[in-house]
Image (cartoon, rainbow, N blue to C red; front, side):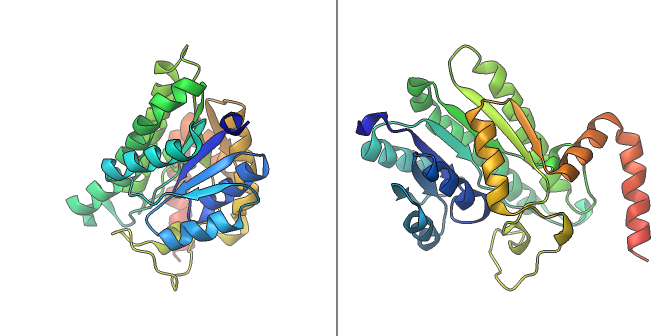
Length: 263
């Protein structure tokens, strides 16, 4: 019976959406491996799960650590059914103020890190006809000033997910690209170098914020149903719709909105 229990691996699993998804998967009977750079946070998540969990520290920008993480969970549980590439952060600031180091870190974590995570997991997912979850954002479809690098990384992640869906067709492996709107997380407390600041206040609109547990439930459901793309929160769906179908109108709404609220 041990080898028949499904296994999920979540990067960025030490906080926010990652830890919330870990709990939802665990409640549904999965064995859950969580990865991230802060081992103490990973251990806290594992200790809080109702089912079996495993902390496998790694840095998604270092392929060797990703490989070691996969090897460890395969050695422990013998299979991998779902991978959720959730690790990411946001570089903020006007594009003219961002240097090449900030651009590289943004893309290395959010884009290359996700691609490397998938590549390490894919041989095992093909054996189980498993599932991939890529955590992108509504920012992949509607853009805000001061978030250009982050927007670009999430747009690239959307392109990656849709391409994977095509390339994996017929293999039994599915890829679900997830686009959250505003959801509780630590993204607003991480600086442009990737360092966490507990004292920083999240500047995103609190009135529009979904809780991480509520977001995790719909994300897990979308992955299990093998949806190709899933956009959620009502404001996220509205923003994505406007950004895709009425880009000119969206441009002027953001321009005038920025002028109005800056008065």
